[in-house]
Amino acid sequence: MDKPVYQQQSPQVAERFAKLKQRPVVLDVEHLGKQFLSPQGEIIQALQDVSFHVHRREFMSVIGPSGCGKSTLIRIVAGLETPTSGEINLDGTPITGPGPDRGMVFQSYTLFPWLTVKKNVMFGLKMSGHGEVEAEQDAMQWIELVGLSRFANAYPHQLSGGMKQRVAIARALANRPRILLMDEPFGALDAQTRAQMQAYLMQIWENVDVTIMFITHDLDEAVYLSDRILVLKANPGRVDEMVEVPVAHPREPGQFLNPEFLATKEHIEHLIHPPVTEEIERLPIQRMTPVGDDVY
Amino acid sequence: MSLTLGSSWFAVRKELPPNTGKLLTFLSFVIPFGLWCLVSYVPIFWHPNMTVLEVGDTYFEEGDNVKKVDFFEENQRKLDNEEQPAVGRPSNPVYLPAPHEVAISFYTAFTTEPRLKDEKWLHESLWLSIKVIFYAFMLSSIFGVPLGILCGTFDFFRKLHEPFIEFFRYLPAPCFGALAIAILGIYQAPKIAIVFIGTFFQQVLVISSTTRKLDLSLLEAAQTLGATRFQLLTRVVLPGILPDLHRDQRILLGWAWTYLIVAEVVGTSTGITWFINQQGKYRIFDNVFAAIMMIGILGLISDWLLQEAGKVMFPWKGERANPVFRAIGRMFRVGQADDELEEA
Image (cartoon, rainbow over all chains, first blue to last red; front, side, top):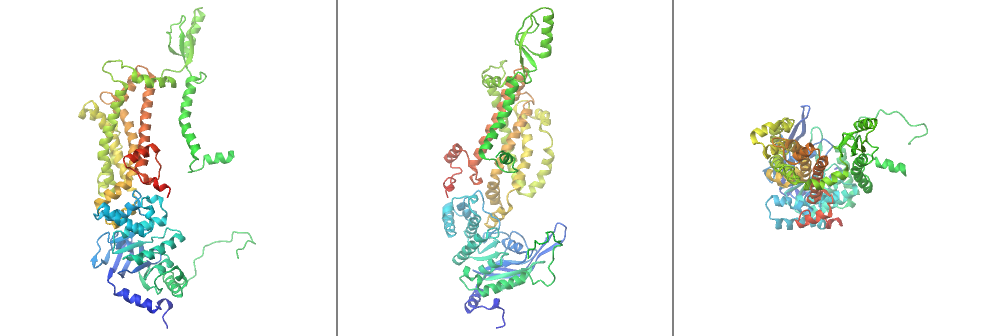
């Protein structure tokens, strides 16, 4: 075969993608553009002609170099920012503003510090007019799902970073969103907690009827979690490539060293940081250590 | 040891060990009090006057408090004339009573009958002052807190109100005295108005700034959870700023006390200020000191009560309240669920 390794899908994986593409489109983004006015008065094109769709129950990641507008993209989908051109539809209906059908998990911990874990998870349900008892029962199920029943009455300041993000996920899921938007949710966690959270998120995604759009700058994380990865380019932010991850499901930490995993990673790495052709910029440093003190 | 101890006392932005901290808190009261005792009880410190004990043939009267120069000049004159000099002991001027005299006044000020029939007792004066503070602060808060929150939340209200308030707060409240009397009469109303003017404009600006400090991402998170604009205000902004609002109100209440003293000389002087001025005129400085300290103690106690109440009401701030206050909180079902968790 002349296809590169990252495009070689095993029959099971190919079948999975065929099925995935037949599922209805949940999120449909067409020719999206976003312009900012910089403080100096220049027009900055943050996003230009971005188009993609996310299918039902798909896990799609967005990755790209810094300044590619990935955060802007997810904030527009959440309704927190308005696009300057293009269209976004959720289940065929245009998005006009933020809503509970697009739950969001932020990188910074956004739990309400004055509410206990349980009350945090109940927040969305109460907003939509659910009764106290019903909301509480529902919330407890979601708290159990993320394994924090013991901490239902704890306040956020008593939880670790990983626990806070699990509550944030439960809080967003309790609203039964059509799509769960995650903006670098594990970016502030240490490596060990982050790996644990990735495993938790896989479990949740497998067991809960939810579609996920996930922003990250971590290649391993993107390849490990995603069905497809949308790679963006910077200046202006635009679609570079939509990569189908050829790693089989269910995903396990052992797959990190599989050839297709590594090939996919390498391919995206090349997309984000193209092989350097010109000479790397070097610091204008002069030798400042005594002779005989060489590092090599 | 001494070196590390010394350097740890002055470590930049580091908390002192709890016992050292307590000792310093204790000293912060003991040192000024000790200085006062020293000046009052040890004759070699200050004592610029003499209190006359035995009159002799001088023109003094018993108990007179006279300058040392005058005392010794008069005695010298008597000695030259071979007359009996006066006997006295060094003392401080009447305006600096000794601690024990003030302590006694703390009690006697309440039990001494007013000199004139229509004058008020101390406790009545104090109560009048507390009422002025209460009404003025209530009135100011009823308008100032909501307006401050609106200005901090909606740029519309901020742009509409803050420039004028910013200008108005530089006008000293006492200069509205004449106006207040013309409009509101001479009794309590103009005093309440002046404390109100002194508090209200600061209150709007301080609370507006506090509201603006609320983490924007909490509002964004609430929006993605389906909160409407009204719900954002009542379910996120309000509970989110409550602990800081509480702290602001504590500080503003302190300001209200400052304006009270100028307000109370407007029109007919009343309240604790009248008491202090009256006792000053009678030259009973023990009572003046006692009354000034009463204001300080009232302020200190009310502030401490509010602070502890805050710790009970806002358990998510992670500050442990005094056990007594926690028990009271539990009675009213405020701030529960914190105890069980501390083991977890």
